Structure formats: C-alpha cells, structure tokens
Image (tube, rainbow, N blue to C red):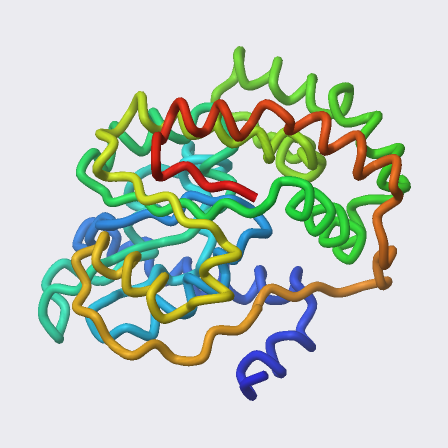
Length: 288
C-alpha cells in the first residue's frame, strides 16, 4: 500500500469528507470557468471503481475530478451546475486538453441519474464495471457494516431489503431532489439487477458510448483491460501502474463468511440476469 493510501486509511471517512467539502467551497465560485466531464464511470458499487479511478487518474492524458464520487446526478443535483463544474479542471487550464472524468457508482442504480446525465453531458463516454452480483452484494454488506450503517445479520438484511428501499423509491417519484440514503446503503440485491439499470442508461445514451467491463477482468488482467477502457475514453495506451484494491473501510470487522442460505437466496435472485444481459448487450454481456 502506498504511503498516501496508508495515511488516508487512518483518517475517518467523515473527517475526509469534511476536509473535501471545505476545499470545494473555494472552487465553487470558479465553476463558471470550469469544464464538464468527458467521461463518467457509473458503477457498479464494490466492483473496483475506486481502483479504476486511481488508475485512470495516473494517466497523463486524464484529469480526474476533485473527489472521486461527485454524486451530482444522484444525491446533489439540486446544488446546480456551477457546483458540479467546480469538481473539474479550468476550461483553459495548463497542459492542454485532457479527458476529464469522475466515478460515482451510485449513478448506475439511481433511477434518475441517466436522464440527468443525458441532459447535461450527452456526449460523455460511459464505463461500467460489473462484478459477480452475489460477491458484490456480500462485499456491499461488509462495507456497510464497517461504516456503521448496518446492524442486521446479512440474511435479515436481505429479507428486509424491499421494505427498507420502498420509502425512498416512493419519495423520489414525488421529490426528485430527495436524498435516498436507504436506497443507496441497503440495496444489496437491487444493485445486482444489472440489466434493468443498464437499460435506463441505454435509453439515454447510444450503445457505442457505453463500455461494460467485468471487474474480475480488471484485477486479473489489468493491462489489457485498462487499455480497452483507455481506448474507449480516447486516451493513448500506456503501461499501467500496479493496480490494487484501494477501497477500504473503518469500524468493526464485518462477518467473514456469507451463510449458505444467503448464497442460495442470491443465486435464485440473479438467475435471470445472464439472459437479460445477453439480450441487452449481445456478445458483450459479462458472465460469471
């Protein structure tokens, strides 16, 4: 682990967020002179988006957002375009034109994010990392336990998921600016229904703007996988830096193993996903 990551891992998430918000306040007045992103990494959560953000940010032709998860098209749309622009480089900044991008995994799940993105950045290139949905759900649960948001055992959290998410989904229908914290925190199974989420983005963007990558391939074969992503974003190929998992957590350690009952439940939950993804993406559909 790099020194930067070691230091960062010792600072609580809440403290890091407060520092970032303080720094951002000084950038917002310059938002009118800043660019909109050329590319969005839209998900999925717990599928390697932090590692991809770090790897792309190291490319000399790329300009990462001020912070990784801007969340403008999901949680903070009511803050306005100047606030969003504050996360990106100045339009006439030094070093020539670079590919500006951000990575917010909640965009894939949020029911309004695709239409909002289309309205503001219709020519953006999109990248989505998809992970085995059973493994993704378990990793998501462990992350929520580490952050202190989840107190239920995993089996009980799966059983309670629909009831937990329903109020946020209903509220969003009446109030698009509602911050759906429960939806984003407890969507262990819902986030794994990839086909329906991708369909929203393909309704908003041409198919050629969306690149779908298996997160397992990103970590097993980082060189060729990053080259594919770079090509999609219009970046020149280059030898990638070592790719590691940079998404950590804090708090009490989560359970080490998923119950067999939960595994069976999730396998049944996602049984129709391979066919749905194949119908949507054809030969590009990931398989696990």
